[in-house]
Amino acid sequence: MDLLSRRRTLLTIGAAGAAGAGLLPLRLLAQPVTASARDVPYVPTPQDVVERMLQMAKVGKNDVLFDLGCGDGRIVITAAKQHGARGTGIDLDPERIGEARRNAQQAGVGSRVNFKVADLFDTDVSAASVVTLYLLPNVNTRLRPRLWQQLKVGSRIVSHAFDMGPEWPPEKTDQVDGRTIYYWTIKEAHKRASKA
Image (cartoon, rainbow, N blue to C red; front, side, top):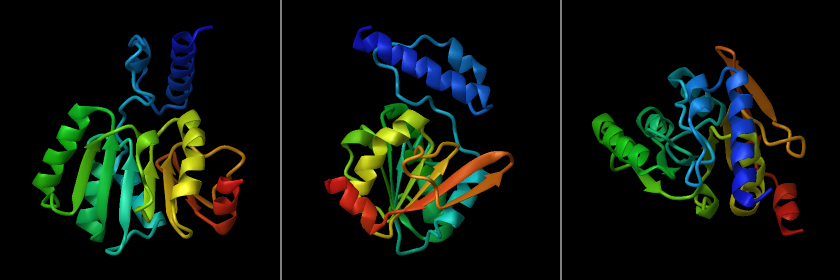
């Protein structure tokens, strides 16, 4: 199986699993997967889940939050508007980034947030004290070593719907309207493991 065929298969399996769990609209499965397809389809996090994610991470005015796969920017914007944090949203889709920038201006937090068109695997997140995610399981597990390597001890990670695999069990979980939220912190052991 060539690389493109494997990618199509993985994306289809990942999307099908998420749809089966009630997390993705079934119409997404009908869309063909092309060489330029995103690793994660755009599905917004409900606002009540956003608020609980930020509460679990105890986001405050001294935090710098990075949302990887930020979509319309709602997590970054809520962190700035309701918690006084600064934030950066990363997304591959220029349309979503444009929408996020407009939403930030409308919310009055344009000076506290930044949105970039970028690949999350090429993004330096070392400035973050909080990282938020709503990605697929295979993307989370690929991202895990970068988080261990780049984030400072004590940094918090919160993920909507998907964990980091059995190698990194969450410290806490919570449920909002049947949706699971996972929480971790970076510890010295993770820093050591990232250098091994």
